[in-house]
Figure 1 (tube, rainbow, N blue to C red):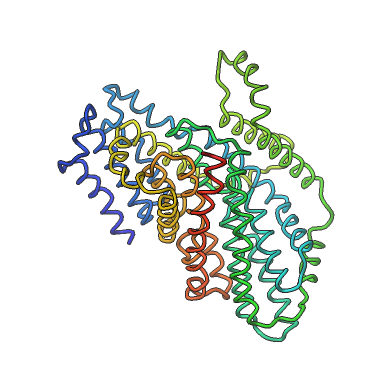
Figure 2 (cartoon, rainbow, N blue to C red):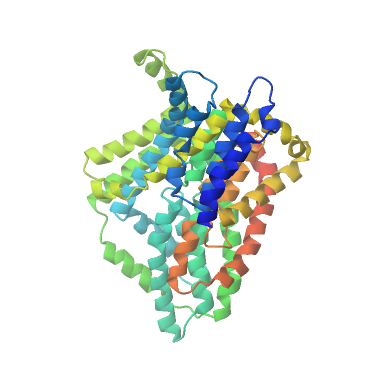
Length: 479
């Protein structure tokens, strides 16, 4: 598949660029829409097949947009500047700061303590244990990467299963699978809830800003996304408990494992207190941005020659200031920062650059005319088609690659783009869709037929819920 993708990318680009078509007939645009389409097709095929590392693919616009004259400027420095500018978008720095804060939580094991405390509060009866695992995982995934959340929660889940099996004297095939799938699914869904929870959310915010000229605030995004997490986690629990209860578990001794893990962490350290305090302040500042930014804007304009402080600048500033504070206080180490997935920042930049090329090259005008059929559909059909197609595409491609492509070709409706973004994190049927899905296969309790049997109905349920959710709630918040 990678070899096919490696060859198909440049071949598709060459065909779009050289073969006469409507892409060469957009008034006043010359060959630029065809050039933008060629780069978009090349990037999409390489992203979907992972023919080369995804971050490498994200660098193609830096070379191809100026070389093909996508922006229509005769000056090479000007073309290079327009191609490079999206790689330093404020939303990239917001995600960078968010990842650094997540790294600090991981360094001091504060995320682990929070998860264990949530699980202990919900209860340790088998059905409550499963719900506690889902809620704890989703809660942590709101603030740190889905992959890091899954890596942390799998050992906790395995320890719980081992304790329960020791008490029952038998292997708990069904409950073990339910618990492990719960880790994967809750890691994915929890990341939907905040701007920094998943790279897909930053892609959405960047596309909304560049393509639609709309800055979606941190609190505004949470208002649109978090209720879906709260609605869908209980549905995941219901589906997984239907499978897990087949083992007919007794009360079990999950409380022993949770208490032992908490005891191993010891009392709350000074590092945890500092990191927790800085993180809490950052969260409050993010959520209060709509109220604080107008107060700060005149001061910033006066100090920096009339600079207009937008929401994305404010949020990125809070993220970087918080991360820098932890570094200066010695609570965020170089080793912790080294574990940050830096290539994700290039991936985000590549997605923003692709959006800039599609807009600047006139391809958006061409696509808008071709998507009139979708826009003429009723709202229910639009949201249903977008939700289902995004869920299905994310099953075979990474969720970040999916939104990088879809958000640039779908109609320019903010609620519709938001629904597609949420749907990209709702792949539950195949391990290829998201890293957490693949991680739980290492537990020995999850097999592909099991994941597909549970995941396919959840995929369809997510698409159906997102259709209604988009119509009823997202349009109200973001419309």
